[in-house]
Length: 166
Image (cartoon, rainbow, N blue to C red):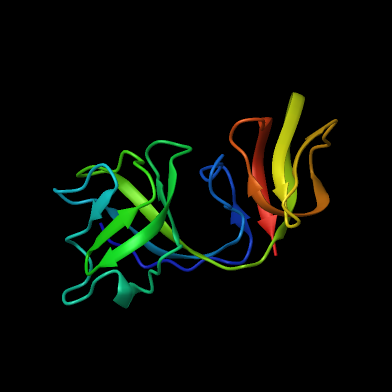
């Protein structure tokens, strides 16, 4: 099923943790759909976009982020667009019938709200200045006063319901 979605400026990070992609500078969901036959590896094909429309007509651009919503974290960036076919930066296991979302990027860093923090929690982030840091002694329900561009999968432990605030 194809859906054109719009969201607010707070972005939930649960599905988007990545060790390779700056992932908090996200804006709106451009496309939410299911991959078609012919998808796999770094190729994503969608045959159910609206008639006569391809990814460019839906507002998808090189640099946008695609994530496999069935397996998390599983995130890639769009590196090429040809009508209803995308080339991705890495294989995120999007094959025929697998749901995915494409999120538009901005250049903004964000502060993070930590919704749920468990025992011995750590949060690894990349700052807007390019520093990779790991935070511990986290408190649930607080905002981290650091401008962040990436939340790492590796090094982030027992923290969930993270929101990126712009």
